[in-house]
Image (cartoon, rainbow, N blue to C red):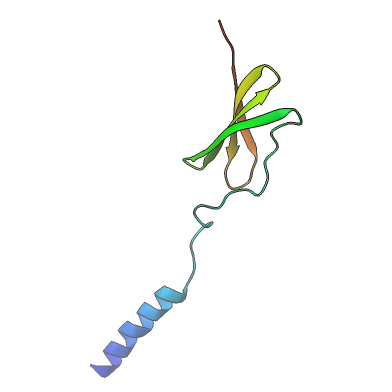
Length: 81
């Protein structure tokens, strides 16, 4: 019985000390490229994406970046009609 208890505690300690997790949650890229003339109006983190609202002169756009790598995923320009 004593050997069984030691085995259980050894397994618990092993599980606690092994780190097979992926990237740390909440990790955000140190820099993202928004453009030389862009003024950042707002930024939000949602579902692993960094959403950045920018103004470039008279235009406004929403830029989407991968939150961890900082890679630009897309751009949506706002236009008036």
